Length: 487
Image (tube, rainbow, N blue to C red; front, side, top):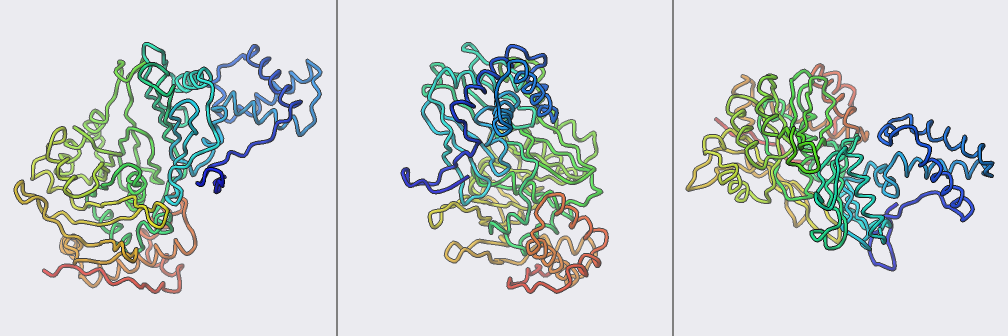
């Protein structure tokens, strides 16, 4: 779908659909017109798998009743467009079907729709979809609101809702506040999230870094992923969560349902905006509410999609009581992170900041004409002082000159893990190597799906020797060894 456009001089996402000749298009329009008058169910009921059968039956009935002449190929084309327009989101549906698309944005009339591709090599790409009729775009935004179970109008022109598949929608109806016409953004819900193997393929991290992160997550260390918009924070959060032991109780709290975990003992919860035309309607359930209530579920791991305000304070309080916290925050440096954590609306005390074990800093960087995502630093949090700032130990860093990762300092967290578990440093180093071999093996075999990755990690927890025997030949590592800080 994505190829170089000579005329525009840039990459473009071209939608490929069955071609409509004038004859088939005329029949399609007539069939759809008849169907609109004769529907005996609501559109929302067509979201499930029964849509194909229902629509095909309706089309066949109309063709027979009105003696319409259609070849089998034409009939298939009519079925495609009818399902697309009635059960789907019209001309936007091909983008909704593409599992590689993370976000879809329309900024107004006569502006190409943009798709944000999960592969950082592409990033935000123009598509061949465009609305040139203001009335048609207004109707589409109203259709989005209907699919979200909400209403939108000139008096209440803002929409914040979720589609039946879990995708989050934010839209504005054309008024004086939307100068280019109606606009919308759809944050896609994906059934197939990025995993550590995807990250290694993209060179966002390497196997050695993941062996270190795996060990921290396994031993209940709290991690905060920091980065700017589009840096891949949520994907990192999902990847880290795959390292949690299968038997551990997990509660995740998100604004938009994006996390996908293979764990049976996982309780996913999603904040809900209020009922009515605006987000301020009654019945709102905020992330703060969900986070407070999560304590009663006795979770061992609490995952928060993104912390912005009071939920950050609540999460750090729970981390202080012994729960492991994994989350993301919008910040592009350690200094900005500390500013956000220590000022309103979060305003954490130094003692609460010290409950955090590791900060992962990830950036979206333009390099050689393409965008790449790189973890530029893994920082162990040793302490925090209001005057001196954060006391950190940078274990891994990224060298922009050769685009390589390097071990910068001995790990203090690994020392703590060895000491508290009563293990010899040599044994822990050996385990890190074994985990690195497992990560290399999954990349070599392209074991990518989150359930398959989770299965390998789960089997390693229950019987590491059998997994290592299956791997067989040891993967030689070029990376230097992670050193553990001496006592």
